[in-house]
Length: 378
Image 1 (cartoon, one colour):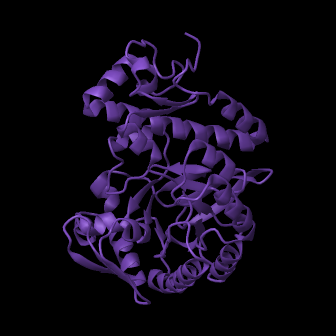
Image 2 (cartoon, rainbow, N blue to C red; image 1 turned 90 degrees about the vertical axis):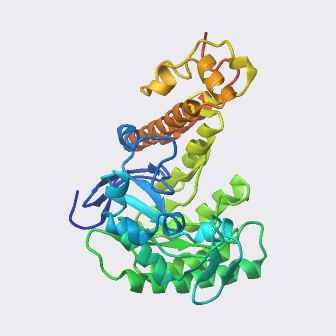
């Protein structure tokens, strides 16, 4: 740990990067996956479990926390770390994506966004300055600029307008953030699926000399090959000595392919959301516990997993819990999924250090068979 925010590269293997982000509250080993704690909770998990799985950092969300319970209340109660009982680093998303995707009526202008809460219909304003203020009240360690994210496909005019507005907002966020010892503000590269817009966004953000750079506006409906093409353009333009964060991504395959292109940090609701809906991620691929084939299967999800949810409970029992709508089913499958994601990241980091990332990727992908069809010998 350090008194200030710092990033160092430890190893390289082709385009991959093994590094460490150091902050007063802890060290984040990269490549890293951040479990999503949107509203101050990683859904269906105790924070002690999340910590034991090996997560170095979690994500919180400005939009959700400003609406409920309110950033000022969280501040009065000691900040998000104390409130949620998580002592390690927290990254907060600015709330821009949620304003665009969840809010009701909304109006975007140079000042910011006026929107209607999806909870009670009340009206709120979110400016770049207010987003940074809220993240400061939450006392997060990494704070994201407010940006405008557009769903794909979109017109060139729409993507360009959102990208340029996001750049202007990034400058205002940097001014509002100022200098905060031990903390960082990241900018967000936008530009949709247009290579030239991505290049313009990345080059302009570099001039702000921020402590980290995110790649946003992907995993919003475009095919995987489009996302990878945008990473091929963007990652080489970003500073070598700053962490790179791909927002809202993704599947295990997305992560492997993005790490190969130089991404350091990830977050996604997929492992927790899938768990609550009966889907397990394992080293053998995805297993849908809703399927009747599991009703009398006494095998666990993975007998060699260090996670009790994967190792100690039969597929038949998990199937029963899911079909019966028991909360424990979602809890166990979420536990399994987050464990698998952290095991995947641990394997990625070791492979980069040992200069075998390509073979690790090939071996991992080879194991991903149709999980419902005897993924390991009976």
